Every structure is written in structure tokens, then in C-alpha cells.
Length: 190
Length: 190
Image (tube, rainbow over all chains, first blue to last red; front, side):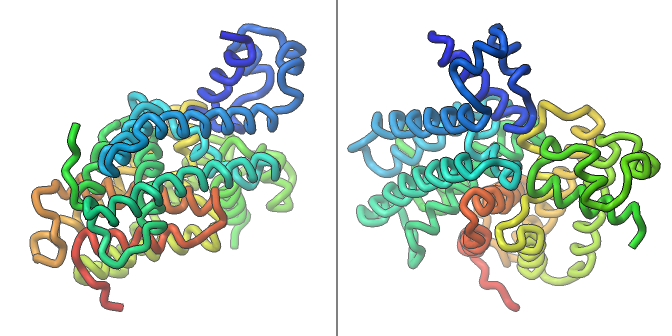
């Protein structure tokens, strides 16, 4: 693993557990085990680190989704829930993007724009799954707009991770997945 | 309004928009228009401010719920959604409790315990609404446990506020309320 990757791993973990405002450049250098000037050699600002963490997280979402491309919508949605279970661990971590909601007024416009793109990626992905599921009759969404259902699912998983952090209980993400299976009317095939 | 109330209002707004780690004692004193020693006169630590903000927010939830006590479960759930619309404003603010999820590993155990109580208050309130709604046949929850449905609703509203912050779009909370009306099978009476 390169030093740059080690920095991004450590920064992402700090963002997911303490928020972007919860650590300094020095904290990050200490955690990676390098000196502050070395950190500046890779990233000239904390904002640059935030953008790099978010872009890498977006790439991960794209890679994970690509693995189930061509599978049926229910299987793709189940994979989406699994992604959030993975991110969450034992109620240890927020989504690296969702974590920024709390600090939103205190971050630069470059990070805010990256978050807009990050959120749009999730909503577009979910919307395409929901639309296909409805067209194929696998999901029952009545007169709902696929975009709204996408927003509901995204709110559910982000909220589940938020509750997991506040309670230390990993059960919320399972409860929310169950809700959407029942709401959309499908039985997951594993 | 007393100085103490002004401090709590300013601190709550900062927590909801920039997170507990996004402001200093000096920022808070500046916003209230007092000097730092005066702030220390009222609160001897930032933790004490966090606890006071959260306890006041919990009291507000109890007061709002008490106003609809005795009404039917659907009306009480609608009031619950309205509370979150009020807290959110024009996608401007997180829930003061939910905002702490992102910073959880970086706060003291006294604040963490207060957050456990805050979350339990919400889940207990929602569970009692869901249980009564199911018993009276107003909600259709099949074989779901009322506690799980409470968790799903809490995740939905917290996630909606999180998405609102990331996108600047207030629509998520309406989409999520609609979802639960459909999921629980009731039509709100306004």
C-alpha cells in the first residue's frame, strides 16, 4: 500500500468516526506514522483530502455496483444494502459521505460540490434499480416516482448508520432492509 | 430571553449546521455577543453545553408529543414528521441529536450517555405510536415488531434530514413521510 493510500484510509476512518472537523492534520500524520511535512507533500490542504476520500468512495460504489450489473433489481438492491453493512461494521462507522451532513455549513464549496456529486451518484444508481424493478414487476411502487423511492431508500440506509452510531446497535440496517423488502414487495434470493 | 437561553440557542444552531466539533467556545461567545469568561460563568465546559442542548431538545420532543396525546396514532405520527420538518427548516439543519452521530468517537462518555437517552426517548415514543396504531387496526404492520418499525421511522426521518443537508433539497422529508403512510397503510387526516 502506498503512503497516499495509507493517508486516505486513515482520513476516511477519522471522517467516518469523528467527522471531518474531529481531527487535525497532525492527528492524521500521527495515525499514519509520518511527519506533517510528508503529509503536505501528498495533500496541500484538508479540503484536498476530503475531496480525494469522497472520490475514492464514489469509485468504490461504482465498482461494487458493476459486480452485480445485469443481475435482477432485487439482487442489486440487496448488494446495495450489503455495501452499507460493510461500511457500518459493528455500528462503528458512518458513510464517509453522510458524515459530512453534520458539518455542511463549515466546509468549503469544493467539498460541498463533491458531496452533491456523491449524493447524485447514489440517487441515480438507486433510481435505475427501482425503475427497472418496477418495469419488470419485481417491485410494487404503485404511483410513486422512482426518484422518490430512491430518496427513501437512501434516507433509510443513511439513517440506519446514524442510529447505529448513536446506539451502538447494528440492528437498524437490518430493520431498514426488511422494511424496503416489505415496502417494495419482494423476497430476496441469496 | 436569558443569556443562558441565548447561549443554548446559538450552540444548538451551531451543532445542527457545523457539528459539535465545528465551533469553539470563542465562536459561540462571539455569536451570542458576550465575552468568553461570561460563557464560562454559565457552562464550565463544551460538554456541559452539549448535554444541556440535548436535554432541552428532549424536553421539546416531550412537549410536542404531549400536545397530541389522546389523538389517534396516525395524527401523532404526522405530528412527529412535522417536528422534523420544523427542525430541518429549508434543509438548513440536522436534528441536534442526529448531528452527533458523525462525531461520536470524539465526544466524552457523558455526552454519549445523553445521546443514548435521547435516542431511546424517540424510539420509545415511536414504538408506543406504532403499537397503538397496530392494535387499533389503523396501521398494518403484519408480523413486524413495533420496535423495528419505530427504528425504521427514526432512520427515515434522520436520513431525510441528512440528505437535505447534502443536497439542499427539502423534499426528502416529504418523500419519507409518504413512504411510511403507504408502508403503514393509513391516510393522514389533517
